Image (cartoon, rainbow, N blue to C red; front, side):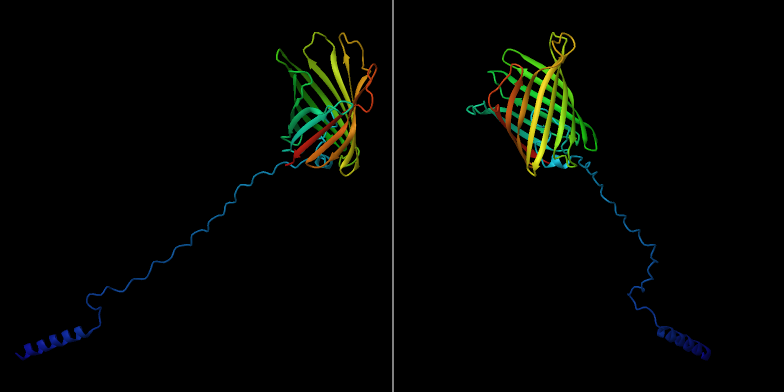
Length: 289
């Protein structure tokens, strides 16, 4: 009995001690565990540069060309100078007889330079005869430049039409220009062209032009040009021609506007025009790139 009593007291004592030990309160979650170890840092994003558009080729145009909207030629035939890529021009021509009493529109033209070396142009000549229309399409390529020398190739298609018929002819030639100064503000040009036409004659027609452009002031130039022709081969009656057409006058220059004022005067054997000749004027508007 005593032993049983002692054993009971011992069991009760152990139970009391056990109940006095600290522990988690009933109903509360266990404390959180330690977070997992962090991995290596994410790589930084790589910046990708946007594509860069290629720059257009630098212009090779002479400074004299930039300052003169009429620089691609003298009066009638072209020079070997070239305009910057993207240049657009529009021109009007006016003329009158020797007494200045009958002014009229002579031509209208446009041109565009897709590259620094190529110029494309087209023009319509005002009809001097009823129902006769003349159109010209031209292309000029500057083939070489060295120092103050410029060389270009030029081709022109001439279309003549009327109510009853139409015809085409061509002119293929080359032109050499020499600049008298580094900026090519003043220059001389020589042109030689071969005519291509529908004809029963076996003779080949040629056209020759010589011109000079001389700058006297920053925006003022004097211009002169002489044009003639001859035939060669076949049944050509002569090696040359004694008839010429002269163009002479003044030019007022700007980057975006050019004006030519002058006279046209034929001269030579059996040709004579009294006075200064027939008056003409051209105005050219230009848009540079």
